[in-house]
Amino acid sequence: MLIEVINATYSYTEEHGAKAVNGLNLTISDHEFIGLVGHTGSGKSTLVQLLNGLIKPTCGQVIVDGFDLSSSNTNLKEIRQKIGLVFQYPEHQLFEESIYNDVAFGPRNLGLSAEEVLERVKEALQLVGLDFEKFKDRSPFNLSGGQQRKVAIAGVLAMKPEVLILDEPSAGLDPMGRKQLIRLLQRLHRDYKMTILLISHRMEEIARLSSRVLVMSSGEIVLDGKPAEVFSQFEKLRELALDLPEISEILRRLNNNGLKIRTDIFHIGQAIKEIAGELRRTRKC
Image (cartoon, rainbow, N blue to C red):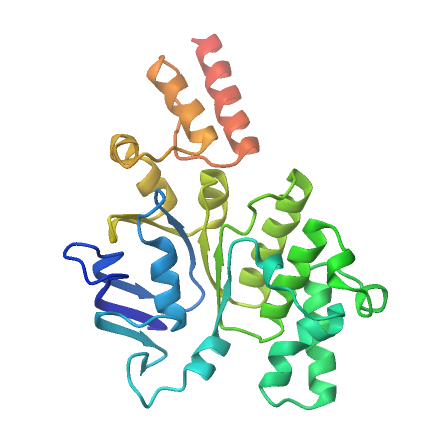
């Protein structure tokens, strides 16, 4: 098991009942792609900070690769190398004068040689779609918002994490930027065998990308399963102030109006084939 959370609780204040995460249990295995959803204040951001060791549980345990993050013997620097965390609007964390130095900051702190740092920067920029020679000497502050986000993500990827956690990474991006980000996450998961935990309010992204979906409410995981299993629980999601993916909502309404079609489809092309097939069958009858 790569990550194990055992009865973890975290409180930002000492007030009774003010628990951002409450007795939470969770296991994450190698090469999973997990979507994490929940309304504002449900505990999502607190959970991912616990996984990265940025905060420690008030009680309970968070174990990463066999190491208890609350133990004084655990090297949190090594843990944060294993688990990369991309915050919402990561471009706000850019600070170096050149793109090269910004992406190289983490690898340099690992004590790597100049040659290894160079290779990591080249690979990370290539992964996010930025040409090394064209961008390495430019200031990150003279880029577009989408390019800045790519540089910020490249800085995390240059650390070569085993797990990549992203908190609303597509927020504020235009449709093309979102498509590029989705392709990057798919490639990291498929080709680099990276374990990914994605927080997003875009249910379409969660449904399309994830093999497992976690739903949080009041600091607890209330649903945990495959996308088709989780998004089939329409009434429960509505109670939690969450929406279905738009495609699922359309298919569900068509089904309720007499068109006998599957509702566990999350890709537009597949949905069109399903609807067209049922219409052809209906006409034949």
